[in-house]
Length: 205
Image 1 (cartoon, helix red, strand yellow):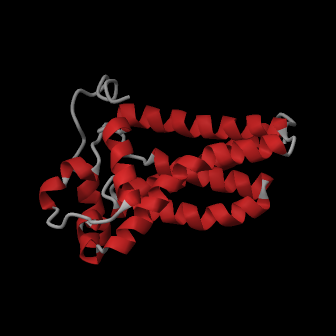
Image 2: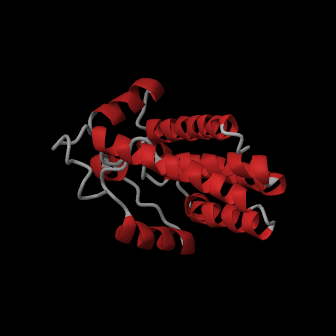
């Protein structure tokens, strides 16, 4: 994706997203939030950002162990659809994340511990510059939480507050603009609803 994201439009739509952030909130949220930086909050937010990586295997494995094999396929269909739509949007609206475009505005370096170091290690080796809008991280987290609420209610109770944390963490950690997170949440909810309706119409739900 990092190599393909500008294959349709060979330039970045970078100014649009921070301008939209500023229009909606009166500030650049990823810059404004640095006044609240503290080691414990930075660790908490990077924990939220990182715990997302467990959502998909957690829901998949729990459904499988409960013998709900068909629900595993349904969940993976919803997740795959979420990423497919996100990647298409990355191609038609290539934009770099706040950590790239607004880096000169940041005046405070976050300090943390294990989770900050872990996420930086992952991001430096696996992130893409052009996957800002929408946040697929947020979208997939919401699909996971909603699916868990439908199929694995106790796990759904746990995933919803974590998903809210993921949504906030994408902005706090400077990986996304606030509008990216909002768009990711909307996309996740939309894909979940339309995907479930698609399955129901075929008598699979």
